[in-house]
Image (cartoon, rainbow, N blue to C red; front, top):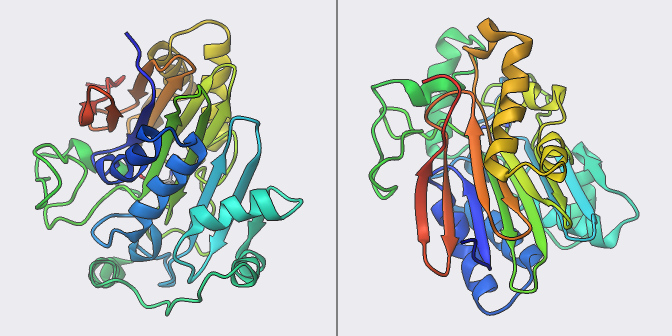
Length: 317
Ligand code: SD4
């Protein structure tokens, strides 16, 4: 049976996100506060994949995207944000302290500074510096989002026994954290935060900061987020599509599956080359996921399961 409260985050690094969200939920706090805490924790984690420690664009700059949405469809988003440590919190400020939903680039940075955030140095983390230098040797833009499939990956220290989503040297491959939560009062919220695809063109935005693509919450239905090749998610308004399928009565897992099948049907050959994975949380606490490729995972925390890593089913085997 479904349990609440519950928090679900993408990937094995979801353990870090859920670890910060759970105490908020456990003491009866709001799902909104829980998902923001999740975002802050992962943006702080230098070993992970999002925030200022993430990989840069092809010009060597880390540009961050994030969004947040609550049970009343209040939402906030920042994109192409540079040198600010907590894009998820800036997104929440956009939601609460501005008449807008989305701010980008220098305007988003200016808004962050006006709201008490600090301008950070802009230097790359040690791991991003190394990855970027290696990449520059060929400077070949080819998203290797599907690296999860490859045998050479092994878990880095401290990330659990599975951690299939890291390169051989321990560099995290995925670069996005999506978290959805249901609180004790029965309200849903979600957030998504990312440094985006590594070595993207300067100015590129993915799905993660886009309400309806990287995240969608509808308190009558559920909360959905996703990870993977953002362009493919934007094309089909991914998270919103999953919510609408759930609204028609599909269980979270089945809704994720049908959304993924819609992506694949358009171009099966192309779909073999990228990853997209959705996680969905229903309003009663039921959780489901589905991905294009094997290797997508999510972390589940509730009163009975303390950060359990679950491998998502996938279309390709
Ligand atoms: C993007 N969806 O920027 C993100 C990337 C991602 O794990 O999820 N990486 O397109």
